[in-house]
Amino acid sequence: MRTWMQIAAISSAAENVRAGIEKLAEGVWDNVLLEGYDHTLTDVEHSAEPSADTLPGMLLLRYGDPLWVERTLQSCHTIKTHFMGIDDEGYPRFKSSSFGNLQVGDPLFAGGDTGYCARAMKHYLWAAWQGNAEARDWLVGWADGWRVPSLKEIDGKIAGFVPLTLWYPAGNITPPVEGKKWHDERMNYWSRPDMVHDTFLAAYWLTGDTNFLVPFQMATQLASQGPLPGGDLERGSREWQLARLAHLPHNMPAEQHKVGLYRWLTGDKAYDEYAWRTADATLKYRLNGDLESYRKRFEAAARSGRHNLEVQTSEVMATDRAGVPAALAADPAAHPAPTSVPTRLWVVEIGIPTLVAKRTVRPAPRATAWTYCELVTRLPSTSPRPLKFFNNCPARKTAVSEPRKVVTVAQSSAPR
Image 1 (cartoon, helix red, strand yellow):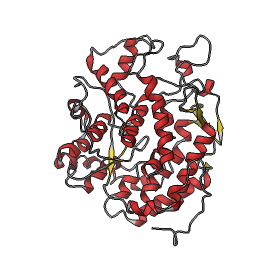
Image 2: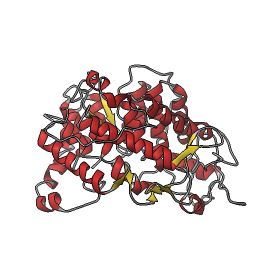
Image 3: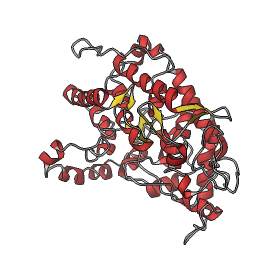
Image 4: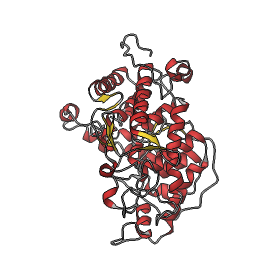
């Protein structure tokens, strides 16, 4: 469902479309979630999906509705209270990569805090987007807890390489098992450093602190120096790390194009060569307004929608597999002049909702080689409700640590 919101938000934002999505989100809340998070104890990739793929999007589709604000804050409260703590370095830290049902799995079996936990932090990101300062501070603190060790040389880890895992409560990169190295394959859950970089960029937008741009700049510079290491590389070696930097994990075509996001946020053109080399028609349209190439992007999607429509619209599927063809490319169609208006970005995995930054940063060292990156889509520049409406909403002031009781409001009387 995380790819449905873009379609619903463009054009007329038809009420029947939004109501249909809301009905599904209600079903997830009523039947899958326990206090705002998955009722089963499992790995974070899958336990975060039911809530993170529905509640943040509803903050947009029902902008200003206290019901969805409170539900998002309930998720934040559950995550903070049951799954996280403050580590010995003073940063917010997930206790494991397995949690749910108000419990935490054994980190020695499931892994410690990893980049995939950014999916659970999506609730904090969107609450911060709507102005909740406590949610912002908790997210930024978690991001800073990753930024600091990412920039250090630690036990053979090179500066600029995001650690595979940070372990609670120590807050370091080495597993709490004698003789185990930080890169031990059996000790680390799927690390997803790309999602850590997404969090750095989100923290930059939330704070304006350019220190959060340094990890991306450093990693891209290291990846650009070459030659690209190849062959059977020793795990944990410098060459192994450089090879991973040059091929940021990319397992789905619907994920973040970090160079494009960096460019939108900062105005820095240092990586334009890379951005253009890896950009699809959607990204190019945002950068140069090439409407013809962008239009052709939808031809295959349109053809696919003319076949097996009944199967496509009736089969029950998991929330992150029931995708709408070309959904992630659809939103720019609402803006014929893409470079002339502020634009919100939607980064699918952790859902960065932001504006094109008007601030600029000092240009980074120019990169000459490229790494694999992923796709970013954007949301329209206007919201269904003006921000001042939300500022007057009592739920806006609700603390993440003390969420108010969620009260279901009948559709006929809910604020719209």
